[in-house]
Length: 170
Image 1 (cartoon, helix red, strand yellow):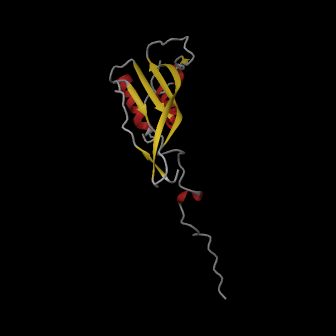
Image 2 (image 1 turned 120 degrees about the vertical axis):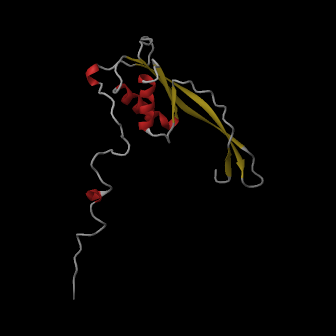
Image 3 (image 1 turned 180 degrees about the vertical axis):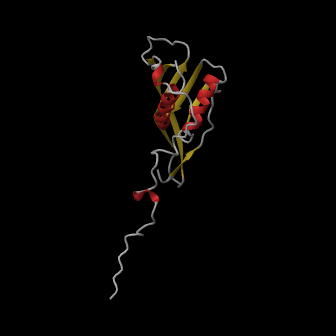
């Protein structure tokens, strides 16, 4: 694919409802968590829908689990599907034909609700026990994980090679 460049197509964005969160790989987890909690606690929504595609699915599951551990009594319903995305590639050299590739991208939708959801749904999860729910605090997971560690070996306290020097004078 070195001799091709992808053609950016305009996206037909569907409107986002007020109680919907779309998670991307670039977004910060703490922003998604605080926004989801504010929708449930301050904005008066009884239900939020959290959606993601592809590589953002792992982050979505973590965000949902952390929200469930901060807001008590949340029922969860999870659904997955697959979407086909077609990419168009233009040749950079003469004599080559344009290409179209289709990729199958996984998509997840997780609904968190204060009210009971359809318990017969295969993706339903009841609320976690109240003793596992901790009150909200300023959550800064990404910057301080793992706690108390510097960069690299030695915790970042010394420069490279200092302290272990041996001088031999002849």
